[in-house]
Length: 149
Image (cartoon, rainbow, N blue to C red; front, side, top):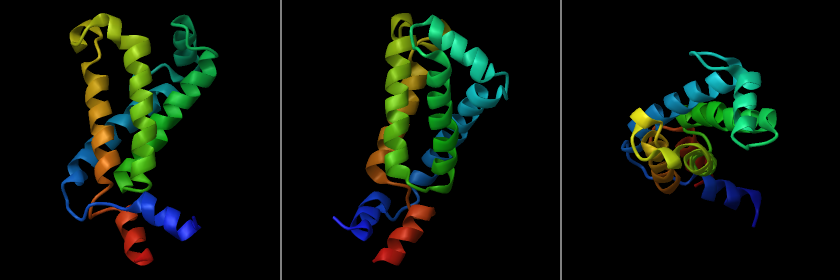
């Protein structure tokens, strides 16, 4: 498979605006959560604090796990906002949410009021939806796909 064919497959997207609000909201939420983990913005604990917490729940090495989760969320969120590499980015974010659900939230039940998994499940569903649909009409992916056609 040549690079043009791979790029065309990755950037393939539906030609509608339906993914735009989903992409922007998911991107904003993921970027903010990643910024909490990486930079201690928005009331977060930064890499050191998040790493210590991750280590305490059995995700070791904690610092590396915090770096990986924070990077996936922060940079993945930015990529969703601009609609670049949306399908592979959404896959990585979906995997990140599955890990969050089963390592942190599942034992607390569904509801957020008990630190349950409803929010992570919602972000998982948003990611899966974008993985299937692609970024949509107003995206970098669509511009790339048009140039390759």
